[in-house]
Length: 228
Image (cartoon, rainbow, N blue to C red; front, side):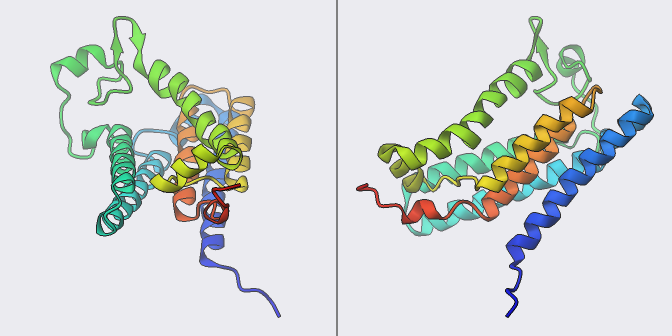
């Protein structure tokens, strides 16, 4: 008897296909010309809107989890999920410059002077010669992602105290295939694509995989005895 394919497997396949498809298309267009690649990752294009969509869905999923935690009167999970929902919503706002282009809103004087794209967002600000995009949204984000995708799963399995915190706060842990795809895609992009703003493809891969983790995190963590 054939085993039916679950809807979550189909979702994984679809999202991975979207990510890999756009990365492959970006690679192809980068061999054509910088202008062709720029059309792939342009503002208000498919890559940006898909990234924004994954952030929106993530924010909604965390908000739903926060509501469920409130019904269960679980303070730790309320705090974590509400905070995570805010972080995803903030990322959504930054990704679309808080709707500036969508609603044709002119940037204020501060952002015109300090934002090197003249947009209403924080990640393109340059303050005192410091590029916040490089400092916070690149270097610190890299450390955070390595900690979440590599270090946290290992500590969760090996350290009882960390495992208890993960369970208490309901932190979604990535499955092995999430980690493998993210590392593979993000290793491929800089090796194969040498273009300005290739980071847009990194963002698409990250947000898409984070969405998949929220939909289907590692489950075995709940079955591990805390006394082990």
